[in-house]
Image (cartoon, rainbow, N blue to C red; front, side):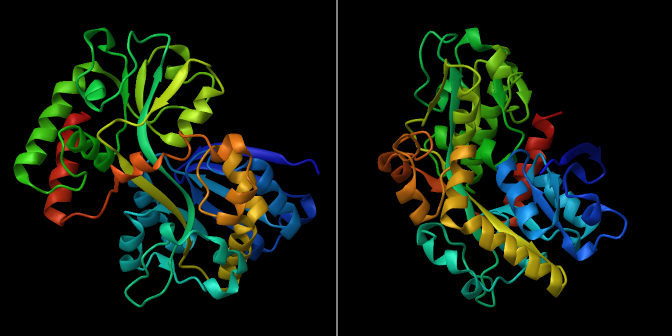
Length: 357
């Protein structure tokens, strides 16, 4: 079926719609058959999304955000009832539950949920209810151009204290916890340290790095990406995105720094929506969790699926890719980023705000 994909920048972020035939998408369409999905850009296989839209006769609206902060602002402005489903990381999911931004999920009504590896399950909320379904997991590392560097990076210090030849050719994130966390890791500390001296040392390392940074933003994942064009020679990235970038240039490599890293997990959560819209959101969760769909989505995006059945059915090239699935020794040196005290978070946010000015 032919469809029209509309993309525009709005006050809600990047809005992408999969439009179904006029009989459904026209003025007489049932609003309850719309599914609003708050998600990172390019974070779901378009073919899979179209299949769901056609199968369930749903208008799927994607609203994209570029940072955790932008997602929070969208939820504050529009309300959690504006979104049927949202992608939330393991750091923010408990906070969203506390704020009443997400709804409990009846996992007994999701047969494929039994196939999810228990390692990646979210902690229940204060009432013992599940509020997030594992979507993807991975780690953070360094992507670089092997043809433009005299030596491959091995350590986080190769990123934070780079060779002089890399001045102005480093790409950093604007994400507060990831940047400060990796600076802490480079100095031999926990990514979740709240010790004042250790935080000061990490802040100093980021200030020392600043003259080498070309951009504080996440890399575009296309043929015009600065890492593809060579404008940037090294960047901090999520592991699956490095595989995606490799499609555009054969000399792009990825390394797990020897000090270890941060492990991340993204979840799909249901917003505070009506019972009818919750039922539609559950249909989507059941669809995306099915082993064949989860595998299609994972191999398309190059991220690690938490579905055990999907993994067993996956191609050898996918499940044995050490970029997508960090080896045990890498995971053993890594840790998830966890919530910190309010005063620590304020300090981190204030510092990063000054750094990015």
